[in-house]
Image (cartoon, rainbow, N blue to C red; front, side, top):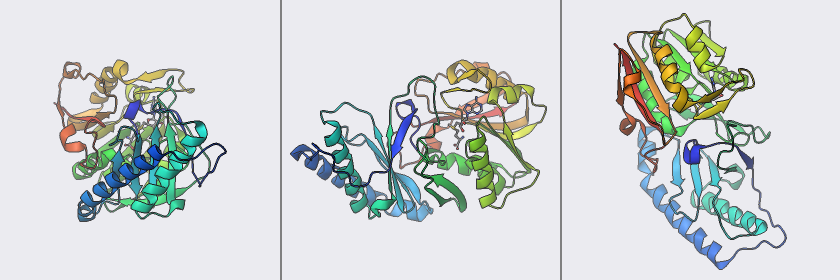
Length: 341
Ligand SMILES: C[S@@+](CC[C@H](N)C(=O)[O-])C[C@H]1O[C@@H](n2cnc3c(N)ncnc32)[C@H](O)[C@@H]1O
């Protein structure tokens, strides 16, 4: 999962086969960097060898820009690697850089014992404007992976993000533990991973809201993979704020994990978390039952949360519990547990 890093945003993806462009080539420095990268990956793989197996975790983060001159993020999704490159200044020509990336990908595949055909590469650029969640390819390399005894489809080739944000693994299990008998709302629900966990925890109903039909279909598919179907599971295409402002239903448990910014051709409005969170949470709290719990999360590093905006509710930051130990960046997200009085 790569959101929140440089505030995520548009990017483009490419599967890198071994490329040999003209005027490329590998410098001595590139080979040194590959050795540094290898040593770091070996160390991380050794460190994480027992932890994921003991916990039954098969999708996790292995490398997170640990070495500044190797600005990559490497996530394992079972027997695949998802590698993202962050745009940083360097002195390589385009062709040299292609060779450099190829060397790093081959190094990761070899050290981590992954078939090079199962290594997926994406390039992330600093966010421009408000475009997010763009499609960046159409190879359709989808895989079903397991987490917490549940199944999720990930797409490692076509989007900036994969469909399963690994930094919310612990938050998802908190939602499962809290869901028995609850009416659950997943606002900005993306591929519905929180919804799957809520259903698995015994929620009596689930409502997944997202602006994107693509993601709502994906959420439905993830629910189906886990054999959750039926009229008690609703999927609503709507703007998150408009939905809570016009909704007449009551919920007992909700997850709100909005993007930092987004624009919508549909509503002609743009979402800005810092500007809009208070209106959103206030409207949502009026739809929550007394004692109802909202998990609210953001990846926006500079986000300022003012609990005073939540009349009649209490908020506690729980980021220390929700950020998983495989994330070197312990500020990958911030999360609050808000309880309606
Ligand atoms: C950060 S992702 C949510 C991650 C999700 N909670 C999870 O952990 O799987 C943001 C989602 O919000 C959706 N989105 C963006 N702007 C929106 C809006 N104004 N209203 C509703 N959904 C929106 C996007 O389509 C995307 O699926």
